[in-house]
Image (cartoon, rainbow, N blue to C red):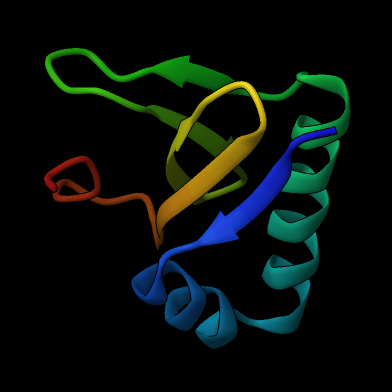
Length: 82
């Protein structure tokens, strides 16, 4: 199991999510940390990955032991700009 770490920005965005979305995002991150399965793809043209959870996107980096959640936002035209 990998350790999930939130950046300050991601923690603030996670706390601002509606309760149902917060449960879904948290559950999806935990499932990915334990099993390595989820709707995850590598980002093109930049480092990192994205996880799709309904209409939300989690942008993150990972190594052998940690998942660093960088941002959690609703899908829009500016979602993948960092």
